[in-house]
Length: 64
Image (cartoon, rainbow, N blue to C red; front, side, top):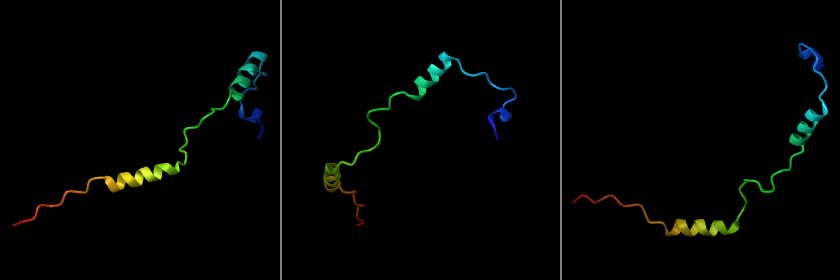
């Protein structure tokens, strides 16, 4: 299906200013650093130490 069939009336071609605006939006620079998590093997040791050194759960008091 052509785009002309989807529109009620045909669109006029973009002028140079509109083309420059679209080009600037499309060709923008990518982010140098992402927010994705990174594997860090030293974090495993830290998590293991925290788990071993964490206080134990309190015990229920014994009934006499």
